Image: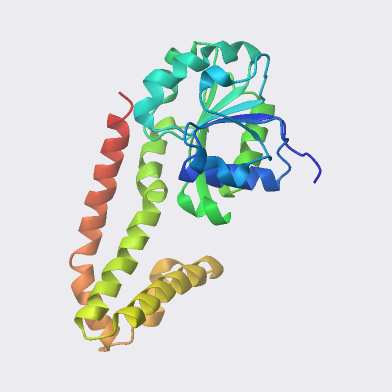
Length: 269
């Protein structure tokens, strides 16, 4: 495959880091790229395709990545970022997907000259259907922004905001959003079983309904409200069910998103 991407340094190869790495390999990520991941099982699928090391101290001397992707847990930032400070001199773009960690705080830990993009992807990146919102910090060049965009669109859609404060509600909505959708499938399955449906049928039905509805939403030019109304016959069964859900869901979802946004801001430290 033609190598279309420059060498990268990925710090952390968990669920999201691994999903991103898989997408980049499909785009021609060169084998001299380096992944720092202490758990060998997390990188087994990438053996021989990139260089994997167990710690930042094991990064090959002189390695100069075009981008450093920070995919560790936000709670580890205080330890990890100072160890990466020597790389700032090479002027890479640091792309952080650590929830809550703001650009100013990361710059203080890395050094004031660090060029940082804060981004929030979501787990559908694993099947290249993710959605990522990014915000560029001071000093990020047009070329670095373009490289970041290429890396993010390799795993789905990408959008940019100029106000970093918007990344916190983005984290609450799209970052955590897949969990809310999976919860919907989970509770639909349980409710189906409670109404007497066999467990295996309840699971298949709930999963297929949620997945199929999502695909229809993605393919339709109509907004979500209209699609909901299309399914809701007057005085029918769906209308009766929605009367229950609409009495609780809008307020519950607003409170849930607000709580997640607040937690994202707390993680800034």
